[in-house]
Image (cartoon, rainbow, N blue to C red; front, side, top):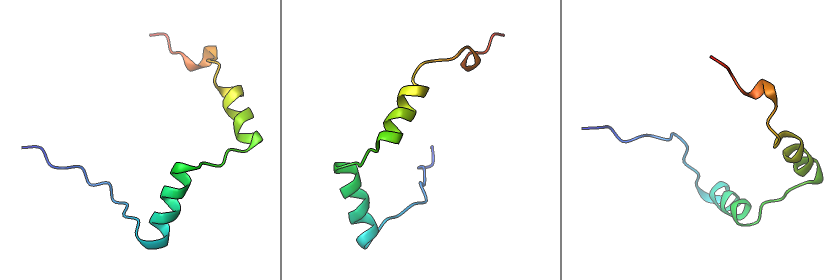
Length: 50
């Protein structure tokens, strides 16, 4: 039988509350949006030819 996967991270108290707040309402900066735009187009170096 397969063993369950242990994630190893347990958030409790204020850490758990902050995590769920950030999940519901993530803060996205203009710098982060630009990074995603810049890196969203595949480059030829992203592909490997065997």
